[in-house]
Length: 421
Image (tube, rainbow, N blue to C red; front, side, top):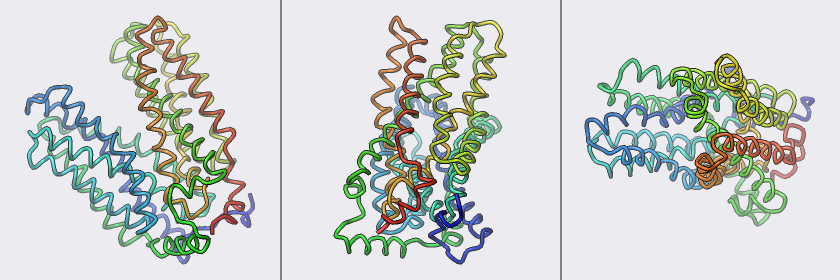
């Protein structure tokens, strides 16, 4: 793709590349601790049960309710981004989820306080992806976006590793200190974003004015008009296929290794951990591929998920070595979604980019909310665990098929530019 056809950065027109990278780093701090906040349950669940007398069901429900808040958060904060700008909205989101993470420390024995606070936390976390990624997209030329989106996505794996190490070092006795590690850093991120990231409020105002000239508004109904309705449905189904295939496999892999194949819990855990390492590499690998060869090329990774799980399900117990290899390769393949932040942002005209990424990605959670319990139910039938893996393989292939029919934005960006107004 020639430089003439490459979409330029929208924000910080006078910024050097160094200043853009520093601005990206500031946004990345908030993004990392957005991912890290999902680990708070790891820190406090044992204490809630052992010290404060919560039942296991209560402790689980406190953190399960977070997911219910992500969808309305995605929608509402997307609209806030169009009105106030993505920078200001992202700062407000970070302040909100940091505050809501602090609130339960006031009275940690209150079940209702925990549930209410974690719901609002989930609500605010739902807005991060759709706000931070479009902001990064508008800060950089197109040729960098896939890699930068992949770095953001890969921080979830880094956050898991970091949280595990920190929890291992401090333990349950320091659970409040561990919670504070999820409160203070995002506030620092807000300060850095305030000073280092260009404000896009004027840009969004211009987008609203241009839309008004055509008697349209920047909202979800307008975004899904014409061909974009089918694109919008397609990406939500694609995201849903990702969540279903990933969780369908991950939720059952260790159980399969221990109960069906007879491996020890330690061996099963170490096999599974290699998937996380592979995934960290995979996000960045496919992000590079997406910037170099096209946003749709990583669908090869999604299709290969099905192939690798097929071989995984055909292996017999005994030697663990093949499982280590396949788990690592599977992690790399599951990294196919690394560049989706850039892809989902580019699929829609620029005036809708504050809305498109978040709903396209998190909308898939609606699909997985209904599909995953049905997938899990298959394990109790005559099909057993291998039946679960079969469904996961089919879902991954369906996702790759949907992706194949979606537009390629790396070469159609010029066409999208003509539809900005």
